[in-house]
Image (cartoon, rainbow, N blue to C red; front, side, top):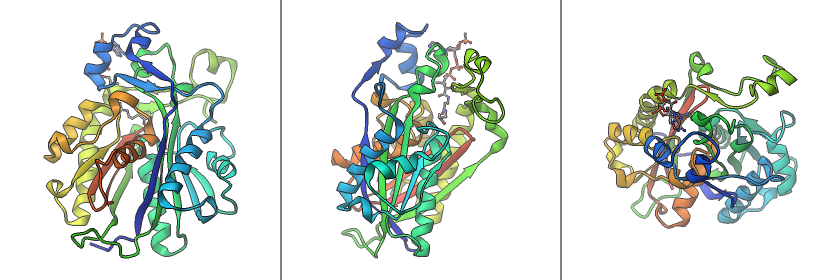
Length: 335
Ligand code: ACO
């Protein structure tokens, strides 16, 4: 295994205060708390208030990550924002984050890989640090899904929530754990399969269906998902990506301290963990409280787990995610 080039120097997250419970949804669509909880593991999700935009949440998470890393905005060499719910189609949400943080004169760009967006960002950041081109990269996963969900469609609206998570990736610098193992990003594996692109889309509002009164009336500018199609590949691909990333490190699943999976569905997480042979008490989850926050999911969960003292320096975390694209990935990091 190559020694790690980069290391997570700090993490942060932001969740809006507003809570929408399953009971609230029972009043909006034909659903029940029991259906939602049994099928997904979700009890409630956070919803951003009017006036809060994607870059506001991303900036709040980024500030927390910078504080944790002991760095200032001018120390950032690159800003990568994974999101499918940008402030606007142009320019990138990342430049609004740059503006709000006061991090000037560094490249700032968005990445569209849906729920895998954070892992795609982490992989790209690692490459820039590996070549020596960049020192500190701010990687953010942020989604304001409540603005692109059709609140009349019970098959999707019960799943998603709003939030942001961020990490600062910097040089590994030969750091080791107390037992002498290298700390840092040990391996990442990212992949896409465009043959399944139609399984999960916001079909309207782009060049295929430019925005029009018809597109709005038909709600084509909202999330459309064939949930079952994704469920089947999710279990298979999450397992495969995690296993491939583990193989790249020479480690086996039982040597990992924690699994930090994308929070899309507790049943998907359970199936994937069982296939990996990882016991439930090693699997981090917060889906009951935050729902599916797409690209924000992993960095929120990671930051919560670090701040609560669950994940400790020197421990190994396997991350995995799959979403629209379909795009998916796995990453192994020693904190
Ligand atoms: N309340 C009550 N009933 C519902 C609801 C609801 N909210 N939603 C659907 N149903 C009904 C359906 O209409 C269907 O009824 P029918 O049998 O009469 O036709 C029945 O429940 C079963 O529906 P399924 O779609 O088969 O339910 P399933 O067990 O597959 O669960 C779910 C649906 C939760 C969406 C699941 O398929 C899933 O999690 N899929 C993967 C989602 C995912 O990982 N997406 C990628 C990440 S998101 C991103 O990239 C942005």
